[in-house]
Length: 418
Image 1 (cartoon, helix red, strand yellow):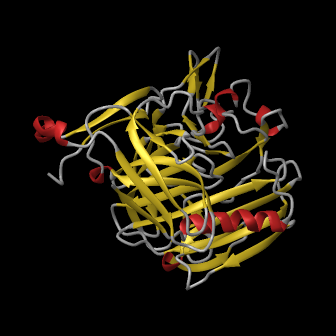
Image 2 (spheres, helix red, strand yellow; image 1 turned 90 degrees about the vertical axis):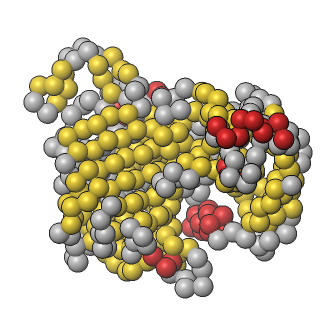
Image 3 (cartoon, helix red, strand yellow; image 1 turned 135 degrees about the vertical axis):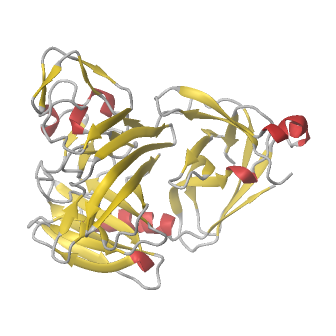
């Protein structure tokens, strides 16, 4: 009985369509009525610090519920959505958001059938490109319109500035920040600063490839990446410099989730050549409601030493490093007047302390060299901006944001089901 999965939860498909996803093993059909109609999930913060904007994750196998659509009811009677999220290893969890959990506090969340239609969409992901024109050499030209298939496969030779994909790659955002990465030979991550908590990416880039570099009511592209790592880009360390994912046979990218609580971009780089190894690299980027930080999960099918990531250098920024052996997570960060608009901007990357092999630099970047475990690594990357709806103007403001992320990552949250 413990192995039965019988559950239906609202989620967004990779095509961006809201669907009811039913997880059902055929062996459970005859006994589904034996499961309780509701569940109480007890969330307890056993740590000494308040945790903000926390996404509760419950393994689907731990929730045995009759078929139906489910919501979470918080102690203050707020209704929140429950979505299914899949990690890079295809493990599925039911997720729901909570805004605040004080030190030592215990909350009981009731899971019951219902609808969360009135809950706002707080994350988004998309992958759009042109149709109606044609390629003239490496560039896409002619009269066109936009289509959002949320998936694409490209040859390894696909180059930058082809003017084919909207803002040159997939985009993802929360109610705090937005990102994109260049789905071409650069494979670098860039930041959109947001001046609003609303979803902005659907309208970004449809009126030209350069307009988002100028300030708009929603915000702007906040970083000039060039040949650097931007923030959180995938790379390898060759002993003297970080090398982005530039040599590969082909690339497939699709939007794995486009939900109210979490959105995800999955990319497979076939035939990645690095450090004398040719391997297939899988990347899964996730962003949650209420979070400035994106979660990067990486997996390779052949061992790759010295997977790396990093932050672009800027002469106007201060480097901040915390490599604490007593903490599960450590970080590198920069802060200063380093945004494209010459505003105060913070950039941070958080990695598991046990996976940090070296913290170093090259000509363009501050670099984290990571040691994969079971051919996998993970890290988080976070920008802040002084024009955010919650402005981060001073170093003290930035360090508060870093501490909030560390609190979530080093959390002592205990979850039980009754």
